[in-house]
Structures are given as structure tokens and as C-alpha cells.
Length: 218
Image 1 (cartoon, one colour):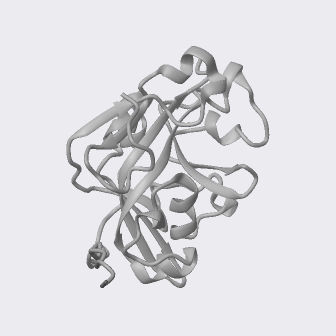
Image 2: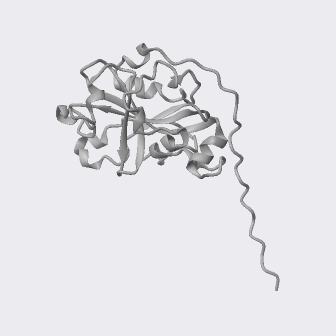
Image 3: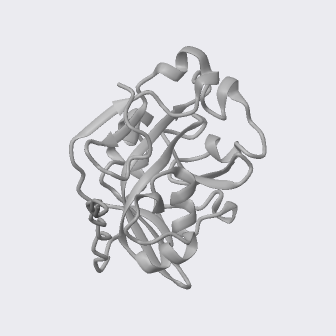
């Protein structure tokens, strides 16, 4: 008796790598209320121009953190330490922190100086420099796991703690204009320790995009 054939699941091709040209968004883009900026991140292009090459991805998922009231923020209760200091500075600077002591997460400080607010980039859809992203992560270019999480984003783009405090309005690391699809919102991910703040719908994502890290809970 012949063994029944198992249908092959077609491999999803990697997104096309397109030539990238863009200029950093002005500081005024970041100098707004954190929820407004976090939503506006969706569709923007995150670019890193490194010596080994340029990589870029369209932001498809972000999270807003609004300390000191927000107990999910690292700046909760006005916590001002060596790690969080940049969050109290002017908008438009990078806030890098380690996830589980292993993977770097990339955030941008927003709002006004003295207000410790930041937006986390949780996922991007690669648009440029796929080979370099793949090499850095050891993941095939066509796989969603290349950039579907905050640590994966930093790994693919080559971002580390050395970028802490980086001015994203100047040149080598920045956001540029892009086009986003329909935006959804849901509670943030892995902040259950924050009590009622964990239920705030402060995660924004592009609906239907396969690079979104976690299926929406609501």
C-alpha cells in the first residue's frame, strides 16, 4: 500500500529588499504625547546605517510606556537610575535595555524633557538589508522569526547597549517616513506585574501583518 503524500506547505518568500533612501524624522515628531507617538510609529521605517551595511524595517508593532504613573514603565514612581536617566531627557533619543539579561530592546524617548515616557519597537517588517539581518540573526530571510520581537529587532539591526542615548534625529540610527496599514491596539506584552496598568491598551500593531510578535488578546 502506497504511503499517502503529505501536501507540501509552500515556503513564504522573503520580502523584497528595496533600495532605501530616507531622512530622519524631526524632533517635533517625538515631542508629543506618548500614545500619539506610539501609534504614529506604525508604518515608519527604522533605519540603521552601520559600517557593514544599511538595514531597515517597517515598524509593525510598538508599545507606549508613560512613567512615572505607569507601573509597567522602568521609570515607574519616578525611578531615576543610571539605566533610566535618558528617559528623563529630551525626546528623540534611544533608550536601550536588556531583556532577560540577554537581548537588547530598542526604545525612543518621547514627550517632553522631565517626563519619562518612551516607545518600544516590538516588531518590524524587513525592507532593506535582508542578507545582513539574516547573517546577524542566523535566520533565513523569509522567516517571520527574523524580526517578530523586540530582541530580534535589535539583533537583526545590530543594535546594542552602545546605542543608549543615541540621538535618532541625526543620522546613523533613525526613523523615516513610511506607510502603514490599519492599526489595532491591545494590552502590552509581559507586563502582568503592573497590575491594572497591564490592561491598558497601549500596544499598537498593524492588523494582519505576519511580523506582529503576539496575536492580539483583544
